Image (cartoon, rainbow, N blue to C red; front, side, top):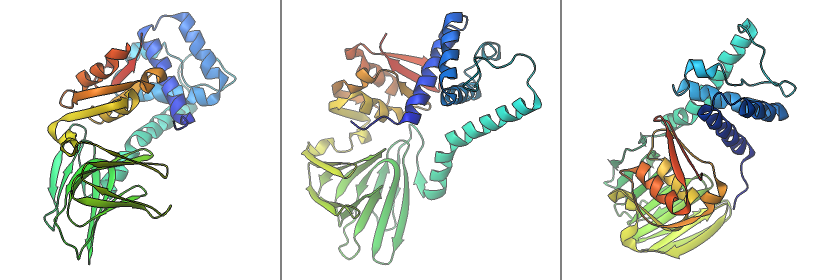
Length: 322
């Protein structure tokens, strides 16, 4: 298992505090414990401040309730001074909100600048390229296309896509995803890009997968799946008919961790999905889930292990165990 990102872990802790206070806004003991957590490390206070502001910007925090919640504070303080905000504090709050917006929006803007084609959450799209090759794009996916001379190059910037490549031995077709390059002349295959990981599934034909940085190479044929994680390669077999099951609105899990399934289903929901229980995330599940109803699919994934799905408006879904 990869080590947890300290920034992401702190952000999740802040969100957990936010949800607990939201559920019990008049619990003075809880607010005191939150203040102690914020005072323990200035980074904690900053993380909580960002979580609260993003929550408020999405419209989930009522103004009356917001006044009862702790603000971001220095490590030596327990609470912000009462009274009307000073000009300096108003400036700082405005800057913090602007920074939060930039953090939330920057990845989307970057994809917009780089991508030739993209889909949003819940949308799929078929794109026919200049040579007749077809790219079927899953939800929340972006690609950049570069046809020049004897090269046909497609970069998968996010998400996953299924490629039906028109044969042309004089012009190799390349799909690049992070450090991985898939080379074909004519075949059908799926490529999925996740943080720190690339999956390649071959439905028919054959492909070559390489990583120039580490000089690794693998040849795949129909019914083979390659997973590339941090320079390590794992190849296994599967039923070719199950390649890119998302095209039929299905998510197929075979001893897959709950955390992986939550991440995959999160691409079909408009807001953020938070998994609060690490132990729950490590549980493994086998089944077929309906991508047309991702909310119900999340419940079906966690319920066998005692998990519960809680929804806070349209922008936040939290999974955990009571």
